[in-house]
Each structure stands twice: as structure tokens, then as C-alpha cells.
Length: 157
Image 1 (cartoon, rainbow, N blue to C red):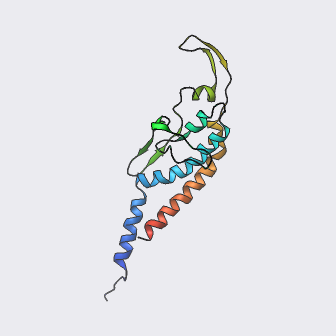
Image 2 (cartoon, helix red, strand yellow; image 1 turned 135 degrees about the vertical axis):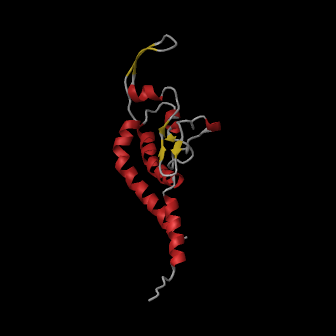
Image 3 (cartoon, rainbow, N blue to C red; image 1 turned 45 degrees about the horizontal axis):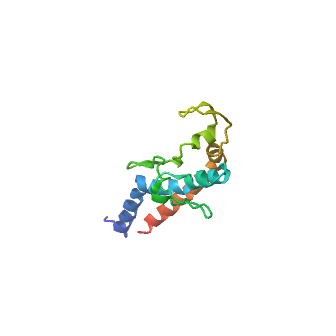
């Protein structure tokens, strides 16, 4: 008895497209969607004097992808170096933060003498860790939804 699978080539094409979803770049795209939840929350809770700290917070390698009302004003990439992202064939990671020299002092505080000889007793004003704690579940949900969209898109090819 001979059997034939109708649509086998179409099925194989769809399975090959789904295999590409596991590639790091696609995972990175979904990660950025989730990471923006944390980045945007950090912008809301960051200490504000001039707004530079808020504008500098972003997802590494994705400084222009911010929420409405929070433009990065990233002139010549001055805020874009928080380490970027790491991508392999089957994994990816993105960083959320800022490259401003005083950002860590805002997050953790500073007591002591700085490199210029000035004495500080600066209290901490955490904004990044609380944003992570408050939005990590939402970030995971957004990541999952974004990944589903990418999988559905690949399956339709």
C-alpha cells in the first residue's frame, strides 16, 4: 500500500520558518518589547532635575525605541552605550540602563570623597531596580506576546 502526504513541501517550509524563530535576533526583538516595559517604568520613577537621566534610560542598542512622551533626545549617540545586546544562534540578552556617570549615585547613593576631592553624603534614589521589580511580570507577558506574533508570522510563510 502506497501513501502520500498532501502538502508535505508546504509543511516543511513552515517548519523551516519556525526553526528560524529560535535564532537570537528574533528572540532579541521580542526581548526588546518586554524590556521597554521596564525601561519606561524606570523613566517614570527616575529622579528629575533636568530630565537628562530620564532621557538617557533605554534598552541597550535600542535608544530610539521609547514610550510616547519620553524622547531620548539622543544627540550623536551620547546616551546609547549601555552595553548593547548579546545575540547567539539560540539565545539573546538585552541591557536596560544609562551610561551617565552619576546614574549609579542616584540609584545607590554615595558617601565619601569623590575623585575631585568633594565630600558627599548623597542618599539613594532607586529607580532602575524598583522598575525591574514592578514590571518584570509584565515584561515577560509582553515578551511572550511578541514572540507569538513572530512565530505566527513565520508559520504563515
